[in-house]
Image (cartoon, rainbow, N blue to C red; front, side, top):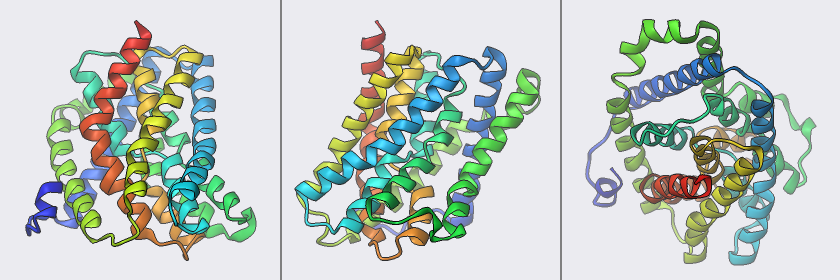
Length: 299
């Protein structure tokens, strides 16, 4: 998809179909994560993982912000907006990571989907702090953060899966298990097309140092994620997913929130960085690298 967009092909996926596929993927991964918690039970490790994910999401934007100000000519507002994207997470990258782990026969903690949901909002609040915004700037921001459709669906399906457990999964497995890989392939085709067009049209703001940041920052974030996962004793699969989450960049929830909170920021910069640079890097090289690193550390 990325190659087709760069070659200016007219290949496209209808918007309604792309939205339907994203809803399907979010529901499927959330439901299966809830079933995983129902089977394994929730305990202290879940709380530790949620806390680690929240801290990573809140702290990463500060590091990203400092790096961007040193290597680029971006304004403080644009740097903060980009930094927020790298503190938050990409649900699709997370889904791709779970699929890769399943294909490799590597087990992971089902509650990691709850960690993914917890890592959406803290980065947005950190970005607002960086540019001097305060919580009283409006209820619209809080609504966009906590009632964002992807978060509501992910958390809601997780809860349903947790309540219904394996019996619930058995009833709908023909819908959310068998077609999953095929739907993911078509959805990633659409993401590649979007990323390629954004990269092609981004303009002069994307200098080589900024593009390099789009590859270096995921590696830094993933390293921090692996360190945190090792400290709290997650399995190899859980550590890989923590690294994938910490190394990903949002292109759904954060752009929506930034439109409300920082309307003066240039969305073409941050969206092209997260979707046009980091997203394809993570899907092609990052995810297998993070899994290999987690397997090495886990022995």
